[in-house]
Amino acid sequence: MWSLTESLVELLQEDDSDVVGMTVAVLSYLFLYSGAPIPSPIALQLAEALLPLFDNDDSQVRLRSMFVFQEMMPLLTAKGKKALKSHVRQSLLPLSFHCHDEDWHVANASRETLRCAASFLKRRDLERMLDVDQTWRFGEGLLAEDRSRAAEHSRRALPYLRSPQESLRQAAIRFIGIAGRHLRGQQEELQLICEALEDASRDISPAVSSLARQTAYVLRALERAPRSIFQVLRDGLRRACRTRPRLSGRG
Image (cartoon, rainbow, N blue to C red; front, side, top):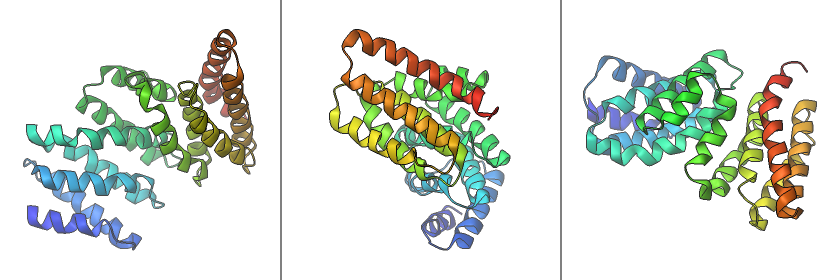
C-alpha cells in the first residue's frame, strides 16, 4: 500500500486537474481507512506535493488536499514528525488565508487543518486564536515567534493579491500590512510590497483597492517617519487591520 501511495504522490504533480482531483480523492480514502504509521520519506514527498494544492482552482481539490494533510500529521512516527515540521510551518500562511475562502466547506476545512497544524507545532498561542475565532489576528501570532521572517512571509503573501477570490486578496493585504510593521529599515522589501499594493489599488473590487491604497500609504509613512511617529502609525495600522474584517461585511 505504501508503494501505491508513493506512486499516487507522483501523480499530484500532473497538470491535468481531473487526474490530480481523483488522486487526492484516492489518497483521502487510503488515509481514512488506514491508520498505520507513515514512513518519513513518503510523508515528506506527500507534504511537498500537497501544499501547492491548497491554492488549486478546483475547490474539491483544495478541500481534499487539506483533509489528507490533516489526516497525515497524527500518523507520523516521532522521527517523521520532526522532519515534517518545516512543511507544516509553511502550511500556516496559506491555510490562514483560506479560512476566508469563498467556498464554505474549504474555509471550514482550512480552519480545522490549521488547528491541527498549530497543535502539531505545539503553538498554543495560535490554537487559542482559533478557539475564539480570531483568524483575522492569525498573522500577528504567526510573526510573533520569529519577526525576522517577516520579509519571507510577505513575499509568500504577494501571489494572493492576484487570487480570483476577493476575500483572499483582502486577507493577503491585511497580512502584508501586519508584516510590513516589522520591515522598518528594510528598504528593498518595503519597496517591493508597496509596489505590489499599489498595483492592487487598481483592483476591480472597491474594498480591495481601498484597503491596498490605505495599507501602501501607511507602510510608506512608517518608513519615512521618525521613531516616535512610527509608533503612532504602527498602532494605527494595527487598529485598521483589526476593524477591517468587521467593516467589510457592511460594504
